[in-house]
Each structure stands twice: as C-alpha cells, then as structure tokens.
Image 1: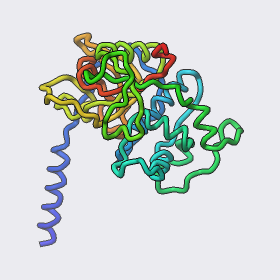
Image 2: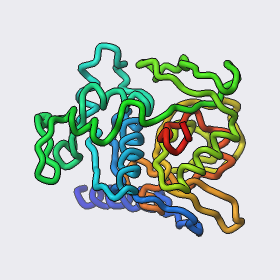
Image 3: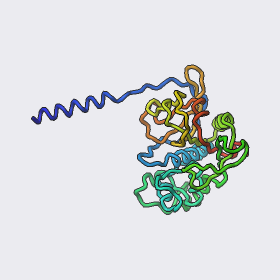
Image 4: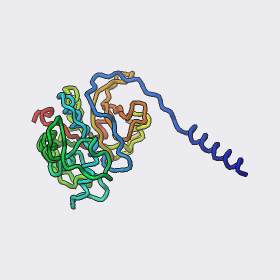
Length: 281
C-alpha cells in the first residue's frame, strides 16, 4: 500500500511539472535601456504602486550616477499608521511620493520585509541621516507630475480623480492618450524613470510570457497594477514596445521585465508619474 501511495504522489508531481509552461523569450531589439535596481518580488502584498514608484526614483538616480535602492517594506509599514489608508493596502504612484515626504524611507538592505523593526537611522557614504532626511534627498515633494487621460474633464486641466486607490487625493494633469505615449517615450529616451499605472487584466497581458499586446479588449480599463518603465524596444515586426520593470519576481523569460506594446500602453494606461524636468514643467 505504501508503495502504491508513493507511486501516486510521484505521478502527481510529474504531471504538475509537465503542466508548467516554459515560455521562450521573444526576440526584441533594445533601443533604450536605462539603469535599474534588481527586480523585486512584492509577494502577496497589494503594494505594486510602492514598488513601481520607488523603482522609478531609483532609475532616476542611477541615471545620474547615484546609487539608490529603496525599501518598499518601510513604506508598507508606515502606511499602516495612516488613518486614511485603506485596509486593502492599495494606493497610487503619487501616494508613494506623499508617504515619502511624511514618513521618510530607508535603504532596501536595511529593511527588506515588513515584519522586522524599522531602522531609526540611514547611513549613506559615511553620513548619518534620519529616514525623513534621506527621503528628501532622493525625492522632492514636487519632483514628479501626475498625468492621466479622461473625457470627464477638458484636456489641459488638473483634476483629482475619483479612483478608490487615490485616497490621498493626488492631482493629475489631464492630457490626450497620444500625449501620454509621447511624454513617456521622450522621458525614457532622455534617461528618466517613469511610473506606469494601468490595466493588466486583458488577455493580451502575460507576465509568464513577459509580453503585453492588444488582444480582444474587454471594454473597460481598470487600475489594477503599477510598474516602472525602464526602456524601449522593437519586436521582429519593428513595432515599438516599452520595457517595464515588474515586482512579481524574476520567473519569466526576461528576468521579471515585461515588454508592453505602444498600442497596449495607449489603450490601457490609467496614469503616469513623470519627473517634472522630463515633462517640461
């Protein structure tokens, strides 16, 4: 009987392994690849928006020649002390900036998980700083501008979107969809980090494949994920793609990166956070 049970377990394990798809990397030619810190894994948290915005800030500094790697766990822990924050743990990229300004931040290696004591000091290049001083050195309060595209208000006007995740009432400049694409492309090509928020519920989005292409649209666009844009590439048909740094670990053909077609980006983007100097403001 024991032999039969062990044989059955072994058969189930083999079947489970054989059902796992091993996707091969599609060929892309890289036009721009800005510097970025190692891909992280948010686990079961709903804090992709923190990971994405911090990755954007990190790329911004790496491209200047600075070495910055920031702790999402610190902000996750501090958000729990804010009475406005939802229990879901969700937010927007600009919420991350506001949390930085209020609670500070520490280095990634100083606090990798939320279940450890929060450091009281940050040591960088022989200098001792408070988390708030460190945060103000890596991101100014008005350093990033929020952009969205909606027909609810005229283009060119600033709005406070009534998104459930926008609980801190961040403001966004409303622009046309084509302008979102152009602004993001210009920022990336000039060496800046860009934070993307949008819809990954479409059939054309696949983290396992590492690719997002337009497929059969489901007729709605939800704000369900955030990533940092770190590059631009073309596929074998010469179609342009943004290269995004995800926070779901490295288990895909591109080590955790996702190649998103410009068409997908145009249709499924909800908002961007772009450095003000890249936007021209």
